[in-house]
Amino acid sequence: MLQRMQKNRGTMIDIVQECRGAALIGIAGHVNPDGDCVGSVMALWQFLKKVFPKVQIDAMIEQPPAIFDFVCGVSEIVTDYSAEKTYDVMIVADTVPDRCGEAIKYIDTAKKVINIDHHISNRGGCDVDHIVPGASSAAEVVYELIAQKEEYKKLIDKELAQTLYIGIIHDSGVMQYSNTSPKTLRIVAELISYGFDFPKLIDETFYEKTEVQSKLLGKALMDAYTLFDGRVMISMTDLKTLREYGADKKDLSGIVNQLRIVKGVDVAVYIYEVGEQSYKISMRSCSDDIDVSKVSAHFGGGGHVRAAGCNIDGTYEEVVNSLMEQLALQMEDDR
Image (cartoon, rainbow, N blue to C red; front, side, top):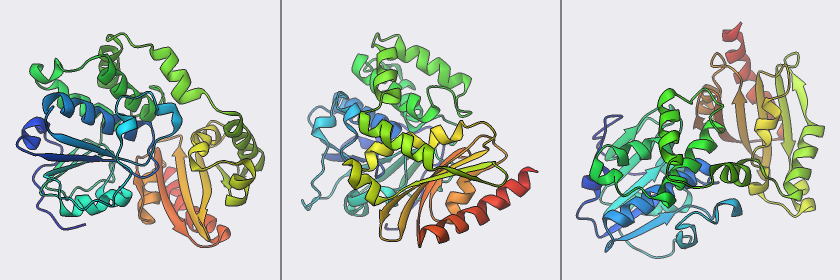
């Protein structure tokens, strides 16, 4: 990505003023979009479409899992990046520009790039950075940007409230994770007052699994093993298994969280193969004393103290050994 002058970090920005005058606005999220990525990107898309109805606004993320098909605007997501165009504003939500996949071509050439995020590993570097590491989710950050002015907050309707809620529940584990603050709960209370069926939404987007997903989860749990006297649980899914089940990476969501809740486990590590000697790693920690974001950052990834991910190349054995070396440093500090 091109080097840009950093204008803000953490201080509240006016997203409407930052976008005012733009004829072409893009909103990008990270590859393998999760609930917070979908929630924050699509909430920004919905909000800015209300503010600037005559402006072309494109949401740019990989097609999300089918459980998010009901979210307003998902059917209009841009997945073709062949067009040559220069955006007046590109907003990067819930990640850094380098993790936006093919959308990076538009981020590099945009006249202004705004980064909205909550990951502690995000060091900024865009024209405008609004990064709030204490927030539960990027969706919570987006809500606060909208709610800061009454004229903006009035534009929140049932659809937009529901979209913001999706982002918050998915990155907070339905308000179970330590990133859930009293502020988060107050925001959630405000959002559910708009009247959408939030118990159904939680079930259908967070808990329900297809038959294939359930079988992959069962196999991952059966194949799991522990290291460090049971404190670390590891499991892996290879490409052969995905092909056998007729599945793809979207069907692996949530497996790492099931590994995390095994009694006695302090750290869960879920690994899946993405190519020849190439693996995607998801990690979850049960304690703030074991910072998996530092492990992830060592390998060029990012995330939070208790939830982080990265990609590592090498044989499976090499990948596990490298991860365990870094985890050992964290676990020594925890003693």
